[in-house]
Image 1: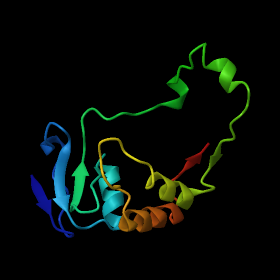
Image 2 (image 1 turned 90 degrees about the vertical axis):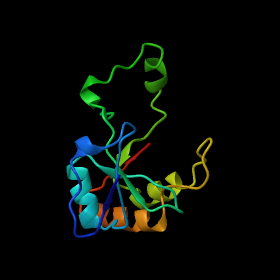
Image 3 (image 1 turned 180 degrees about the vertical axis):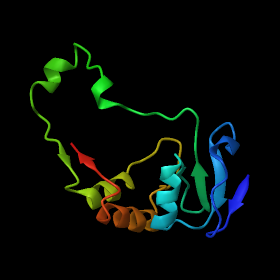
Image 4 (image 1 turned 135 degrees about the vertical axis):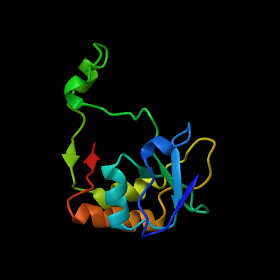
Length: 132
């Protein structure tokens, strides 16, 4: 387990444990978040924990051009019941995600510090939202 100070770099992602936990720290600044995401690292922790930095292998990546819609789903989607927008309600999305009950877990990982720093990244044009 690596404990990183605000002025230290992340260890190589190959050092993550089998679940993907890479490091523990306190710095969750927009600069630290950008450094993390550039390396495939993300924060995920509960309100009563220090910042836990993760880099699981493999990571789930969804390429929309490769998405296969099942035959049974197509008629439902063709009803045009959904409106999709981008970056219209970023703050509301963050707020509502923090309210979702997580089965078998208490609290939320979307702390006030997470909200503040991701909102800053959104204002910088780095963090985005998709609203459906």
